[in-house]
Length: 291
Image (cartoon, rainbow, N blue to C red; front, side):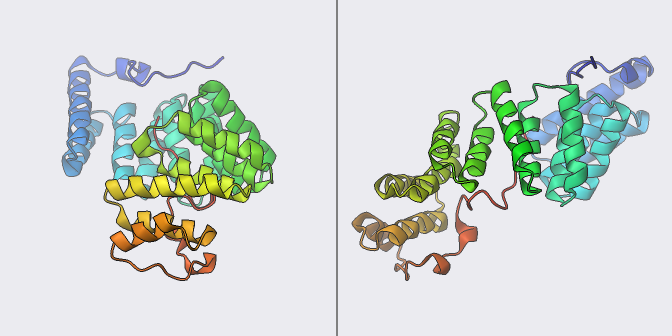
């Protein structure tokens, strides 16, 4: 069985470089961690590139540089760095995982599948890798394979909200509404209230599909209220308009829209900008990037 690389462990490659260089590269890697936390992008890149001058096989530096490039949308550079990290240490599961994410977001689904599979081969219990592989497979129309990956993700981590959410979307797409609703509720269990808008909208959409309009309206209104409190007024209004699609005379939704100084428009589905919604029926979603 292949060894799983621990990101915090010292790589055999690192052991082979000189003690002086090791101290320099380790110090620069550590400084880059701190600078990333402070949001100093140019300084992070500078420190990591300096570390790589000492040792171009510095796996952690390539990996961190890839993450930093991803954080500012430099996906081409990120892909190159994740490739370097996975080349220098082929059993570094997180490097394959992040590479798969970047490739997927750049419409290279075939290679993304390979990288997620490589991550899983090095760490069979990598829940996020199973979940993100499921997302790519679903996008490729391979629903049965995607279903298995979402189930593996949940088996590895029963509180993986993204995996429950994606599984719910797949179940809803194939007409299994009752199980989809159950999975949406599981997704909510593992999420924090202020991070749960997407999951709650997913539940509301499923309830609406099941013709449970009262429950769906309740969810949409609560999400709208939370969005208003967090300052996301435009998204909140979209939720209230969604309520009006179901019940054009809903007093609460009309009152909320009036309070935002916006007038309710013709509540037809075609009139609503779907891109405004926190969830879009499980399509076109960026997926999880955390390790």
